[in-house]
Image (tube, rainbow over all chains, first blue to last red; front, side, top):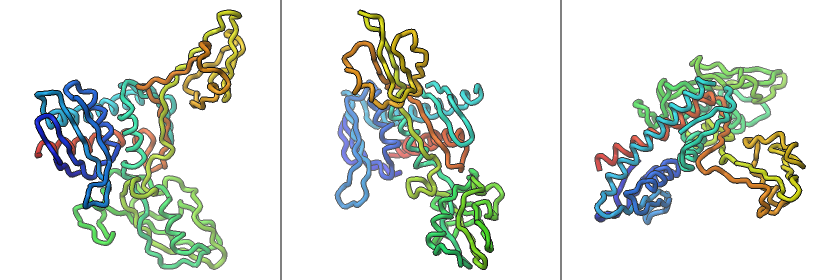
Length: 97
Length: 267
């Protein structure tokens, strides 16, 4: 995975997530939209100029006074917590079966 | 997040996942199909092949044999040995030998593996039928790979989910009868509310045929889908057991999120 910030301002950020697929990007987008600090967020798997590969580009716009990168870090932690919750719930369900 | 297991066997599983968003459910499904690494035959050194199949066709058939995968092996791209042209080290490759002479039906169980933990998931997969005097002698090299690169590394087959349907039937306020027929006869089929014995919503295949028979504005039948509850069903190709596969899919997503977080911190 390789991250490149394509454009950045106070409350907006466009970030290229090289080597990722819908698997993670869609979860990131959905988790971002659940966050009240976010005004809007979306991603697009697109072909950038001078490249043959299609890579996802994530766009975030936050509420005034929030930092996009800090929210992204929180989102990554939330996704990890979700995966742990899933594994724990599944292991528990198997044991009860 | 809550999980309720309906069926769980070595090769397949069915469970209800509730309290999460569609993106996470879809992530788990996609990870099971494309991102859980497994072992599969990638290189074949052929010493003798006088069977009716030509070498490439035999190679394809060998590659599609699912191998039980032990967690110790790493993909060649991540291996410290710096594998060149597909020649790696004992951490990233396993060798399987096949030496058979006709007349005989060659099955996947005829492989002799260098590692007893790595063997064909099913012993009875036919590979080629040999006649009198025909012979196949080869060494096959298995590597760890991902389903997104080729189908031979696809661990989860027939993985899917649907939203949990909720079926509500109300009798006609005028006559007290209902006329509801599930075209699949799976969920319910009744002409009066007393006869409405079977209403197993998990069996609903979302065929939508009811919609053609009945006007959806008809208040006697209401089918809705819970957007936060998913009925998962999946099969494993044998590389892992079904429950291992599910847990590994969650680990894959966690690992990716961890990597994303680590890179963000350095940014």
